[in-house]
Length: 166
Image (tube, rainbow, N blue to C red; front, side, top):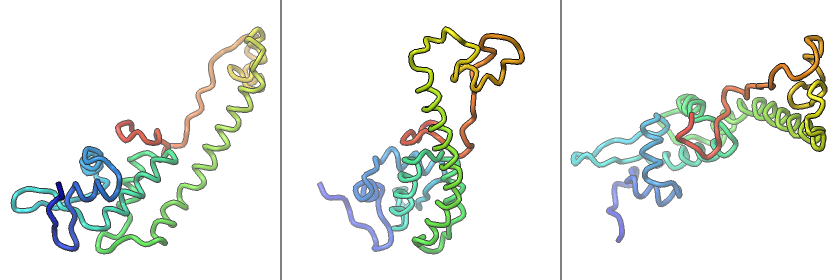
């Protein structure tokens, strides 16, 4: 059944969902989190400006590379509200994240390389284990594992594709 048409500049939640490929429940979630905004009609129905489609696309792309919704919201808050964001606006926002993503990639490569060195050892020598004691930094405290490394990922990283997790 076709959805009711609205004015040229406004879209219903169903139209945004259809055009963006995002579930209506996700759009409501994004709105509760302050990522997108709607206005209300006299009958209390949501209406979205057309630039919401670009914002939703940006949210999804950002989530896909592991940016948290909190940081996405902060970035979207820096965009102009009186016009549709341009390619330059998006480029400026995503450039801020490049260094953090590069650091995350380096961290994952190091983790992968340490894991490769560990295969086959069976952790019979915890003193020199690449996972529990990288480069034997705890060796001066005595033999054996003292703690598991707990590297903290950069603050802007979240779980990609999981908007419910912050």
